[in-house]
Length: 320
Image 1: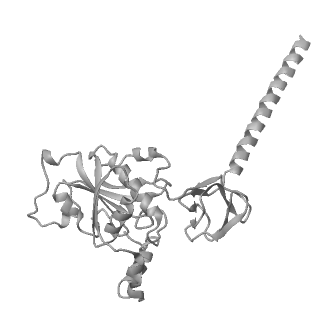
Image 2 (image 1 turned 180 degrees about the horizontal axis):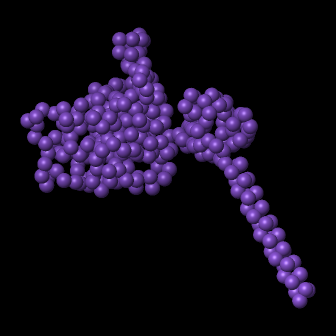
Image 3 (image 1 turned 90 degrees about the vertical axis):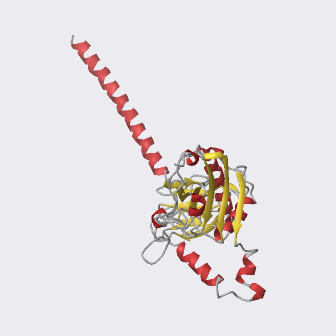
């Protein structure tokens, strides 16, 4: 009897030991996984790598697939960092200078129009209101959809304005897109003031703020290839919505909103049916330096305003 009791005790101790060993292995594995996961987010884009979740002024390096340091920069005051002019390639990593912690391998793409993942065009955009659209590199662009029955800037319209109503103005709608570096996604109505005209003619209008402007994510630069690719992703995403007539869209806009149409259309998005650019430029060089002279009457002030609008929103900077 005593022998049986001792045997059971020994068996129980052995089982307890095995459970403890498995537990220690599990805890060790979880701790290792946690330690290998960097406390920041890094992602590849079009000849760029962006990093978020950093401490202000934290120093980071971009490491090439061959292990060499390509760039070393410090995060901004909001904990963000952007490496530009990065050659296309697979296997880049971001390394924290203070302790050597690295990101997972990253892919940096070129400016080819072909989508990286056509599945992003299946994202849902509601047929009205303020919302966000995710582009191929994960950047979220702010937009407002104005259906014809709820025109842009409606509270400010004359009291005798006849609003679209009835079965002819039910979805699916003929749809136009305004895409610009101005405050287009403002729910109160875009700065251009022409969206309401299209609404009153029965069109739904999608007003989208360019990356790095207003409440859109990402970093702004003048007429960079990413803006063209964003335009491609915008067209294809909006065209796939069930409330868009025939799954085809057009673009409209004036000035910056006209220039963005030309840049987007050159990539030939399959579901872009027409564009209507107004008041565009032929080249940035002839606008900034007409005849070789600096255009400080308009171009310089315009460029400075764009840079101010691209800063984080605050009492004295940024854009709605």
